[in-house]
Length: 256
Image (tube, rainbow, N blue to C red; front, side):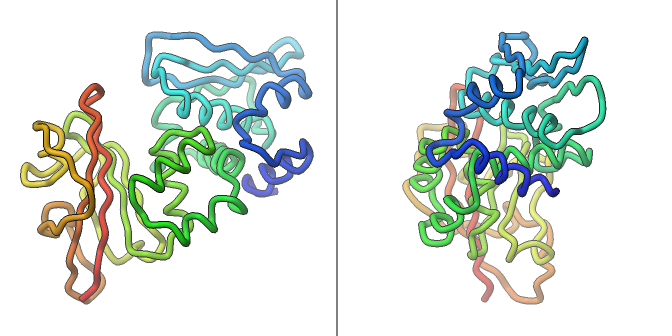
């Protein structure tokens, strides 16, 4: 059974029709999973699934102080359990839970977590009809109790428009995603690259500048290769969290 189907089965088995993130304790108790969380002082370590002495234990690092991220970690470790991944211990890092991880079992656990926390049946209709903007991202993040980053990546799973998202921290790109309609047509800056000095993202990070909508930007600021065969125009919409040095950038591509 594929990860998304397994997550849907779990939702059905527990008759979960409200926010799935509110049901972890009930699921853990049913499966006799021992759950614990603490601040490990290591922001790269996210959580673990441990099988030892006939017991199953899920540990979650609360160092990030982000309830949405903690919920995703719970769901990710529950994914390892529900998918019956072989092994006595899974220690999952930040990289394991990012969109570009190359480990098959971590990809499966992420797919399970996305479907469990943000069921397609509920999120797809919103993603296809609502604007791709920070209001929609915030609404989905709040309703399903996930981080804004997880919310925006899930929206892109279903959105029909030509959009991309780039997350950066301290001016360095950490996350990249795009709608299915852009895959294979456009290459953006990659993880580890610095954001462009002329980007709105950089302006939001270093000054009090705040964007209230999309604005035209030179495509070369973010796009490294256009393979579509058509000229493009690009619009950017960035918001910064100066306390963490993080910027979330939404990009809209128009083919001319």
